[in-house]
Amino acid sequence: MGLVAVRCGMPSWEWMEALLNEWLWQEESWLPPGVTWQDIKMKEDEGRFPLPRDLVYTVPLAFAFIALRFIFERLIALPLSKHLGVKDRIRIQADSVPKLETFYKQTSRQPLQKEAVSLGKQCGISQRNIQTWFRHRRNQDRPSNTKKFCEASWRFVFYLISFTAGLGSLINTPWFWDHRECWRGYPKQPVAVAHYWYYILELGFYLSLLLCVSVDVKRKDFKEQVIHHIATVFLIGFSYCANYVRVGTLVMLVHDSSDFLLESAKMFHYAGWTRTCDSLFVVFALAFLVTRLVVFPGRVVHTTLVLSLEFFQPFFGYYFFNTLLLVLQALHIFWAYLILRMLYKFVFLGKVERDERSEDESEVDDEEEAPEEDGDEGSRKQRKGAINCKLASLANNCVLNNLTSQRKINCRAQSRKAR
Image (tube, rainbow, N blue to C red):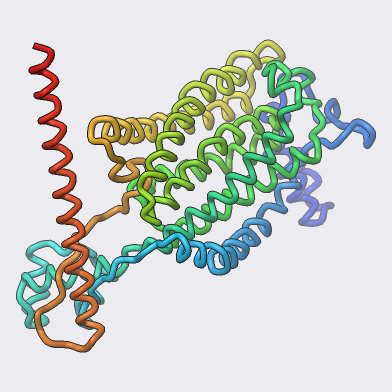
């Protein structure tokens, strides 16, 4: 009512700012009961207090990360992929059929049987050839190993630098060892310059991932990844505005501690370094299960849910922050389930066949052999590449069958000896 009364005598921008301050920055939402904005003001000699306007810099920083990633992938990641021996499969190019191309882009990438029959009549092509065309067309859109390697190497570099810098800035802080220190003196807690940049860079990076999610390689956990990025952006932004910086730095450190191991395992997987990939994946799985299922809920979530109540009464920020943490924990449990499936396969099959967490594409199609008609040299190369891929797959299956048979023989021999 007060704003409405003075609306006529205020410029529009001042009125909007006053309205924003009245509704968005209510003390009951951001501060514990009995604490006002005046109580947490700091003098210059007391240190830096986090202000919401600081987060504005993360938007141009996100675009800067996208530009830096573009340069990194072409000048560093691409030559590195060639040096490590990353190879792309030769895919058969689908013939140019405008009606099928229009249906593929505008209607569906996998037509139903009725749709395939209708398309066949329109184009004068058999139903089998229609299905083959769509299979080849889908395979054309599947990302190459080089593209996936470049993406993984970019995330690996950031997560490694972020974890190293974050650990170096936190290891000597009192709240790193005693989590009650996260709340002692809250909310009037100064923020160090190192932790300020830790926050700004992390938020800018996750914003860049969210902006690029539509052009990046889509995994089978695509929806969970989007939810994770959105929850992380809200978590970092809200915790900074509410001055949950101390516990927020611990949350970011826990996440970065295992992510760079996963990205390094992906890089060696694309390069065909199977043993190195398997070893790194086992290390990552152990680190992930310990940090996300033990340290995160047992230490970080416990201090925000339980220990914080020793210093202040619950308020909106308390419930909102902990809700976001629980959303992340639910995603951790989902990914832990996929990782445990991988460990099961590694223990009982002796090989990590694929990354159950996020390595599969959303759809998988078998490569088809090239048509039998005579064509140019490019078509012959495609046919040769497709045949080689099938021979390699057949050889791998034979090796796996031999290994399985050998294991059964060994088990029977051990049983006889035991008897």
